[in-house]
Length: 318
Image: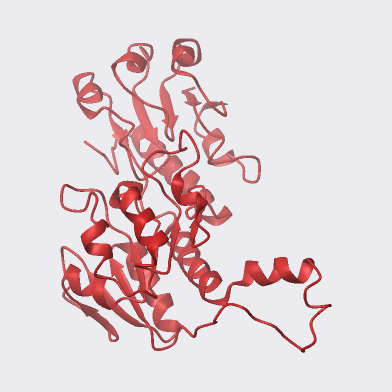
């Protein structure tokens, strides 16, 4: 029986889903978190290792002498030193597409919360303000309809497409910038250059990978192109945004708000300045984390391992 070790399972499963589909593939040992110095003890007899964000490098690989396959429980694999696994001829696979619905839903939930200020009014009612109101209602933040407004999307993979579909369902106009424009374009979606997306979006949502071209794409000069009423949403990668520039733009009123589910460093080593601002809403990288999404991810890892055990190698990352 193959020994399967999951080194950092907690963020994938804090207890609300099960790993039965993995248990069917071998003898499964699950650790919530693993310090690199624990690698040798935990991987001594491991044939297959599953990692989420655990760093696989020369140091940790040197303590995985029996490992024949590494399954990444994520899409991103920047925690894997590809040169080292290649040198050791250890195949590695990732999982794609598991969180499309979850991330797109988060984007729309954040937009709706921003324009309707739901959390603000819930707090005010709990504080007794409605009871004390001389009127049948009160509102001290302007509330806006999404219908007729412009949703800008940078990156048009599965998540970008899903976000565009949801935006259209709310009656929004959709502008998209992507490296590869699809041949079959959908009605109500217009593909254009990046600067037009920055200039004309009421909501700008980032769904692109980190490349030399996209790193720091949200910076002082591109922020200055945006509407003062605009909302920036980043569920992509933290490094897409220059956080100091965004701080100044939000503080000065260059744009109205930002919703960030990702930061340049995660977890942040200390409270970031952006968290001080009332118009910046930061969540701890949870857009992907619906129960359904995490079940999809577990099933994807199981599919990859099952294929490997059958002599195949799918979803390879090198």
